[in-house]
Length: 215
Image (tube, rainbow, N blue to C red; front, side, top):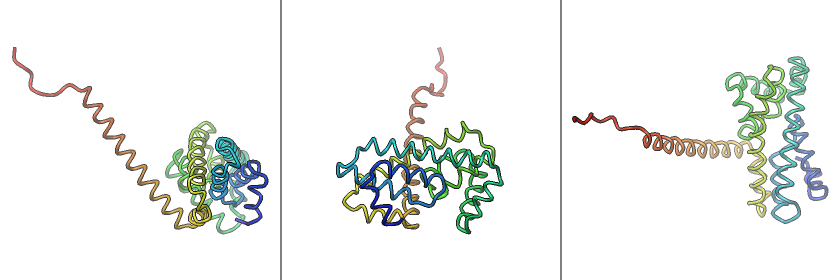
């Protein structure tokens, strides 16, 4: 990310942050996570409102998703091929998005909003060109973006005093990997807790299968 873009964030505030998020979700290579981290740090300093940042970034991200989806839906595979022709790295990301969508379906849309956000902007035209229904797309995309924007805005707010160190970690591939491992571990733990909780409640309403008492 260029220093010029970072310098614009405190000056132009919410419009600059939201517009950067929109462009990134449209497929322009901008570090959305780092931008939202700085937005969260500006909330911590009292320069910006948390809900203003959160809602504007969420709206911008969802609009960017729609642009990518409808570009793929209208342009078809031809548009995706032209989109992927922007360079070897873009081609690899588009191929990864296509493979992941084929294997995971609608869940690929949800997870590429936040856990695998690197391929999120490339997933949008791929999903549109693949003929995924719009209602299915937004059903997975909006909750994923809500989680994504909340995570990085809160991280920026909490670690505002060490924002440059956090941004460096987030911008590093190993940092993304570590964050992904931690997120998966937390998700696994929550799933296990819910599973055992539901199991206990289920047992509570089941009748014991003991022997019938003789009258």
